[in-house]
Length: 146
Image 1: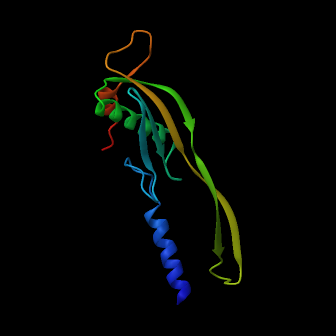
Image 2: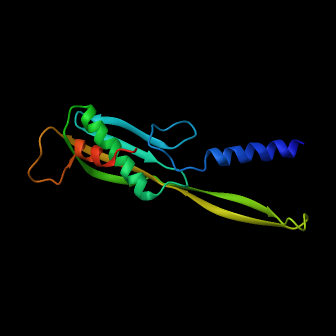
């Protein structure tokens, strides 16, 4: 009976966490974005996904948050001055039981990769001539999650 409750709880956790990280602020047990201001025109923006989130989606969501921060603080353009890979991985042990032979079990260890990216951005009110900038409003309109 106790084993059934444990299996039910573990199954519920896997079912609830089996989707890719959505675009949202990072929670206690979930991925998402975080950001903070470094100076009047510089910010640090991060996005962490789970094992079902692609690296491309992680980059898209980090840039989306950077564009939102740019607009929120009254700027129109931004550049990524630097980026940092903040991905994590963990090992998970799984056990399979043979339906025909209950005494036969197969254990396997898998590595789960959770992509993460930290962007260091600088914002501008007007478009600098010598830099390849991203226009925040345009990026948001092309990449806002539906």
